[in-house]
Image (cartoon, rainbow, N blue to C red; front, side):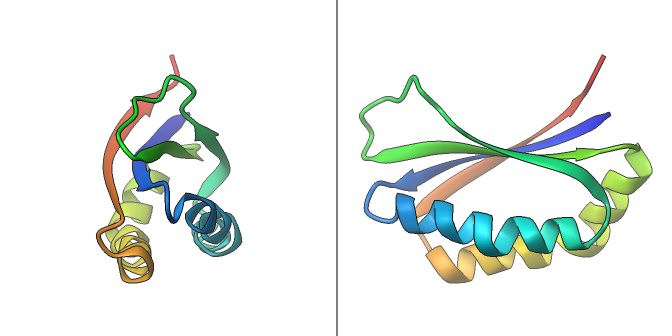
Length: 100
């Protein structure tokens, strides 16, 4: 199993709206590609007081090929949708993991 994790630090002013939008639009769009087999949304509990809330969006892929296809065809467009909707109210970084 391949795990594609994106960690987001989201401004507290838009955190609830961001989470609702991710669940209502981003995750259904990602799953509609039929490449991820499951997903999770997590909130970091050991938060620093930096004016933001930290979330982890995780997509699971059965194979490296499925992950690669997702990255090559879909990931940029989905990232652009988040950027268009929330602009500079978040920062993110990706982590690529393998279940061992």
